Structures are given as structure tokens and as C-alpha cells.
Image (cartoon, rainbow, N blue to C red; front, side):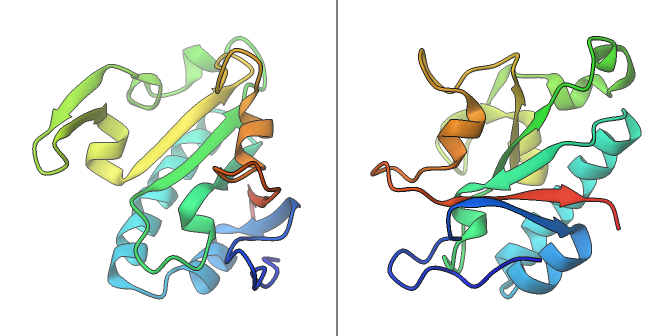
Length: 152
């Protein structure tokens, strides 16, 4: 279940929170933009589940009170090395493509679905920070929560 947002930050309280896709949709899709992003999130999560990925986390502005977040940010945890043989290559294509309306380069998953999923531990957020650590703090270093998306 997704807890109430922290009134001082507008973000989830620190920690790992668990929610099904249905609970995420019910709680976090109050605007047309958020509903569109939810469709992309559902597409990504179902592709990850089909590949045997169970640990999927979302965070960033989608998991705040911000009415119109730019995207859904998240990461998934490698269940085993053979996951790369099972997952649709689309979801691990990190080649940047031009996005004219955004005037920048982004991954195809962002362009098509409004989602950006990183891979833990294969990728790092920075030289000394993992994605689980990165997603559990805001840009000012204040702790915030993430949501682990669970099967119903």
C-alpha cells in the first residue's frame, strides 16, 4: 500500500513501499499525463515479469504529488545472468535517440512509453552510488521512499 505523501516534501516517506500495479494506478494517476505514464509503466512491468524479473522499483517525480511528472523513473534487480536472454531487447536498449519535442536525447523506452528503467547492479547511478541508494534520496540528498511494484 502506498502511504500518504510527506507534507513538507510532497514525496513518499523514506523506505521501500509495496504496491500492485492496480494500487499504483488508483493512487498516482489523477491527471491525463499521469494516466499516460501509467500505461507505459504497465507495459514495462509486464515485460519485466515475462522475463522473470520480480524486483521492480519506481521513484522520482512520478511518486510525488507533482501533477504532471516528466516520466516514470525506476530500476529492476537482475534475478540471474540469463535474464538478458529472456528479456525483450527493447527494454535493455540504452542507445540515445533524438526526441525533437523534448530537444534532447533519451532512450527509446522514454520516447515511446515515458519510462526510464535502470538495471541493478549492472548499472550505477554514479561512481559511488547504486540505483537503490540514488532513488531513496531527492536532489538535495533528503531521504524519500520508493515503491516496489508487486504482482497482485
